[in-house]
Length: 208
Image (cartoon, one colour):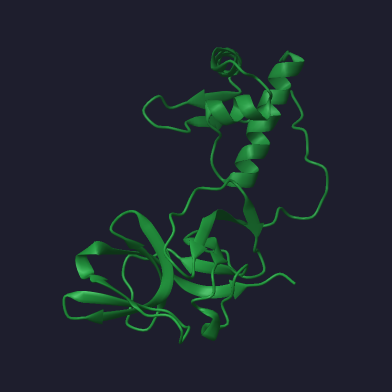
């Protein structure tokens, strides 16, 4: 079965993407990975590969590209190398002083030796309000994504839908106390319905 060089490269890109991520790439990811600015061009190549029975698409779901077994064309093996490290998203920075808004950041941290949970993300600490818990400015906290927390747990709390902070969590009647671990700082008292738990801290990473 004849393939153009570009079709072969796109097929290999999809194959390697699936091996690495466990799911198929979007048209945008294919375009970015193959330096194709036009999604129409990506669509054309995918359609041609589909006509050659090298892949199929399910038009009722996203990320619907499924590779089919190739006959007559040897599959290119990826070069032998160390296994791909497991990476966690670095979503932004979290205040350990006054609350600040977090922001999305495309960076990742390789943490394969620590956890393989897909429900864990990483935040970089800013401030010193948790210093007595040995969480200081510049540290990274590993956060398990949860919606509820027990009293005394260190949590990432979203306050009034706008600002996040890192504190110990305590329920006090209709309010929540977000307690810093710094004797020079006062706790944050807020109505319970104004606080949304985004996760609890399960580990701390520090660079020297």
